[in-house]
Length: 126
Image: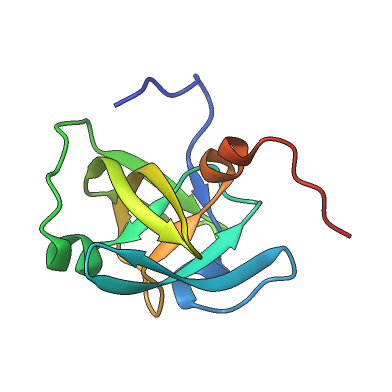
């Protein structure tokens, strides 16, 4: 696993964990392997996350890494249970190889944050 910057914890919004929508978030469908996945794209997130359930169904190979704590917007802390490298995700016909961290997500399969958005280069929205 890549080293985390000192003092910076991975963060995910409560909206992502409860499947609510947030003003800076967008929901879409992606394809991973033979399965469709509900994706939340949220510019306020630090990492990309996959639901433990979907990771299990896809039988993704867990990368040996130290467990780490993810702070939820309401202050709760969750333990990231695993990491998956180079997971092929098809978003509307565009394919990405993503590093995903496993969390117990409800009503969502993937949550994509800054790690994914930075891959796009300059993004402008109005």
